[in-house]
Length: 368
Image (cartoon, rainbow, N blue to C red; front, side, top):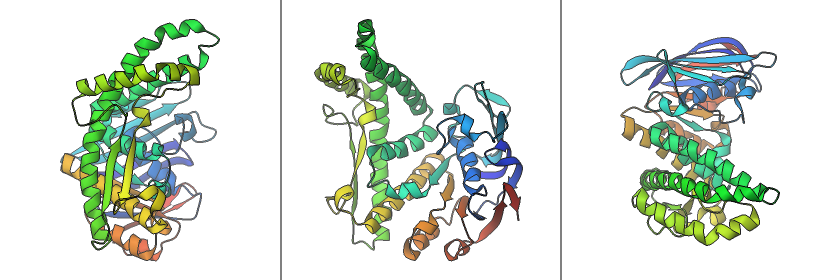
């Protein structure tokens, strides 16, 4: 998969922009606050249907404007394609692929895949579970349209159930709908857990191989999937998972009502990461944690390749500057294939060692 050209109108700090990229490594350089990450964000948005920084699409529209657009001319599946996103205040966003409107971001699946690696991801091993769930969700939403649809429905139901649990004191009749939401939320959870368990098994295998190579065979990386306690084997079919989730819900129903919190579901999932049998979150050094994070991201890239037969676009947003020379060199050595977009504040030694196109951004404009 290759992004040939990106055109932006009123996106973030860009008025109008047209940027072309080579099919190898593209180094996007410039001073801080010039728009380098904004360009990466636009590519990620057109691939996944969401921003990795903004809470709402309104934040993506240039200050003073009311609408913005992203267009990406890509080569995917051996043919030229065009993806577009139109954002406008007060109206629902529009996603278009090859001239045909899409009903949801889930329909972007398979058209353009992107793996994002930003400085925050270096702490994914030691941070809370939300970041590790986000890793699973981001990859699976691009690979499996059914997963993306189930996740969207889960989030909608979760918000409704949370509102019931928080407001039933003032409106007791809200509890009349609780059991219905429980069943529907459990059904979505079963789908998500089934997909995540299979994904984790593959991720564990590939990340362990990368980490083993990185550490010279000295360290072994272990990854396991943690979900609802009543589930003994998350690889079982969704029907059996549903039974176990409903059992957990029944046991925690009163606790949910008393606490005002949803205590059962896929929103509690996590990845447990270990190095040589010890919990990485508690015992890994900073260097070990960062190596594990690199292994996870590079493994995610390989999963895309195995599934699609093409490497996804790799987006490295100011990551190399956060790594020592050994780790930066290892990353660059592992990305010889596929298209890569790298941002860096200065054209430093690590980025310079990657042969490819150099693009300089100044004040929301491209200067080659």
